[in-house]
Amino acid sequence: MMRLIMIWLVLLGSLWAVGVERKVPILCYHRFSSGELDSMSIKTSVFEEQMAWLKSNGYSVIPLDTAIGYVTGNVKTIPAKSVVISVDDGHKSVYSDMAPIVKKYKVPVTLFIYPSAISNAAYAMTWEQLHELESTKLFHVESHTYWHPNFNHEKKKLSPEEYAKFVDKQLGGAKKKLEEKMGHEIKYLAWVFGIYDDALLVDAKKAGYSAAFTIDRRHAASSANIMAEGRYMVISKHSIKDFEHMVDGTEDRMNPSKKEIVKY
Ligand SMILES: [Zn+2]
Figure 1 (cartoon, rainbow, N blue to C red):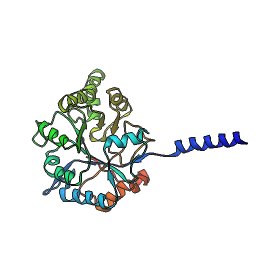
Figure 2: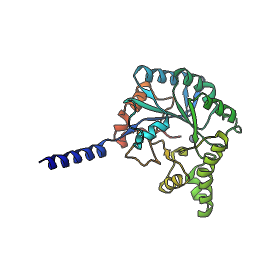
Figure 3: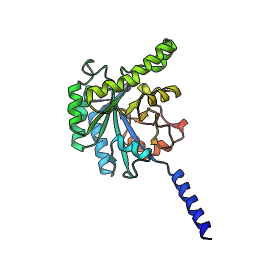
Figure 4: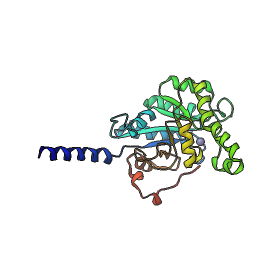
């Protein structure tokens, strides 16, 4: 009898371990503006409204690293209402518009950066600005490839040998460059335009990334491929109700065919 109970308990335990899906919503921003808006921008005041909403509704903004630790089972628990904030591209409005609000609300933010633009393109931040943001301990730089290419186009254009070299530069090359420039390990990658395929997921792992992120609108989850975790792109047309549905899991639970598609 005792033995039967023991077997039953072990079975229950393993069922629990398999059955519990570990999920976290990750938001993805691009640009901030107090004036003219394009499809990739969000009003700076709307971003502040979202931060205030998270605070007054009991949400905890947690670092990406903690969220991935949780999803992979290395971090045992996180607050029930947890959310991650990420920003792609390194636009200068992150420094001018977003940073003051991030400092006010003291929320951790991951910046996915492609090094070719930094201290180079007029729209991008400088390396000095990135270092300044990291010195606040609120911002942390990760990789967004080397120069933000469209992998689909390049795959069609280049020979298999050229493409392999190109992929190596965009994944491993970007990681190395960012590590040199920022002085810390680069662990994570955000797919450019949300484009990835099975081969790229393997390549990213081989290049040394621990996890990679898409713009597929779903929570990052333990059941997903760790190299293709979902994120919610937040743009100007989203209302605070839309925002609520991203972070509370309503959009995650929606039938995929009914989900809105937010693309570049
Ligand atoms: Zn991008």
